[in-house]
Amino acid sequence: MLNAFRDNLGHVGSYRYVAETVVLRPDKDRTLYCLFYGTRSAKGIETFRACQIPALEEQSRTRAAVKIKRAEATSGQGEIFQSLHEMAPDRQLVDLRLERDAAARTILERTPTQPNAIRYGQLWPQVLALHTVSKVDVNKIVARLRADDKLLIPDWEKHRRVPQDGYRLQRT
View 1: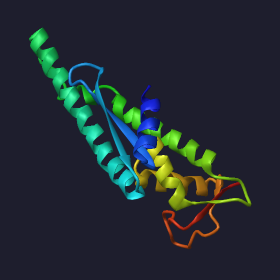
View 2 (view 1 turned 120 degrees about the vertical axis):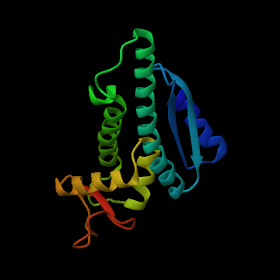
View 3 (view 1 turned 90 degrees about the vertical axis):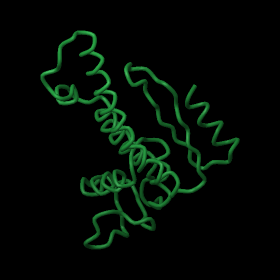
View 4 (view 1 turned 180 degrees about the vertical axis):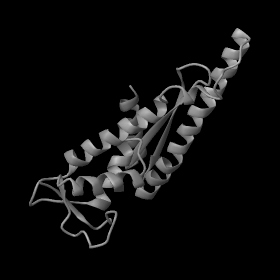
């Protein structure tokens, strides 16, 4: 249903990129609401994701604190650790890692095989629209895929660490 809403919002609003973020209830593992963002520019999706990821991390910390206070109030017993965050893997951080893995798959799927190519400036906004990753994340993923010989980037300049918008990407 969320995908249908996102697709229709993009179509009706003529938005080139539409992304969403889920806001969870502070004390329960349930959705409070979904926030959708539509933009016609690559810079817009880049800025949205750059703000979204720290907001998700803060949401996770806040929810952990609320859960600890609630448990203390219910049981009358304090926690030995400052945060349940420190005791178990943070689901939000696991989800962000899974999003980076999915982004890498999308990059490979959307990159044509030789001799065809896609410009990096066309690819990264598509990836940001589909996955909860930042442009910095996508830069690192592309650089890693290049180092692993999964992507060819014939325009890559010596001493560059991240791809540039004009670079052509090809799959091997």
